[in-house]
Length: 297
Image (tube, rainbow, N blue to C red; front, top):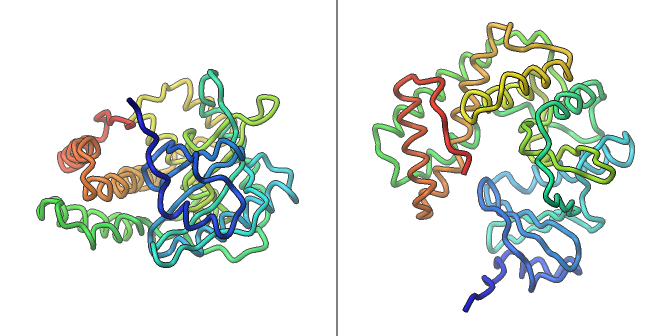
């Protein structure tokens, strides 16, 4: 006999603010945030639980609405409710987004993302205040709270983080600074209507060097096996090859460290599979192995 897991307490608390049916909520993913499908409403609920999520969630919703309504940009669309919903007593922030069923078709490749980023970077700033991109902020925050991470790993990560931030600050961006997505990679794209590729997950929008939005896809080539052909398609669609810039290796190394934050948090919460992957990633980083394959899950 199977049972349906009880809805997240933050979702149940959010019922007082939005008229969605939370009782049939189905968990889709737990990584940097918890993602639930509300099938009766065709809505995705996203729950974040870090200290700065309230402002980031407000910015994400405002930017996505501006992109869709005023720029005609293919972004995932926030649900038409007053949001974000802040659940203070649980330290949670909840946002609601339109659900885009993906069916059985393969996920979008990196090529369409390159075209989306070229278009995004050509826009002016949205009508909201954007923070400067905070390099490796989430990793620093989680390392402060980590209690089960071996002290030698924690010390190495703190020192490596400081080293990369110092290098990042001194970079001279060929593409210049401006409005960036902040967490752009093919996994944050989905199929919309009429096979249009949409860019989603707007929690990290910021002002920063535009190469930051390109680095994640190349890091995925090194760690997760994206092909040379797909990376070439990505750079051609964007109109620039960032690998020829000497500072790009710093951004790739930053992305490697950035991916650890959610694994540390989930390992601290007792997730054994995430703990094993975390050990693997840290060991390859400490060994200086820039080509070791990592598991996506």
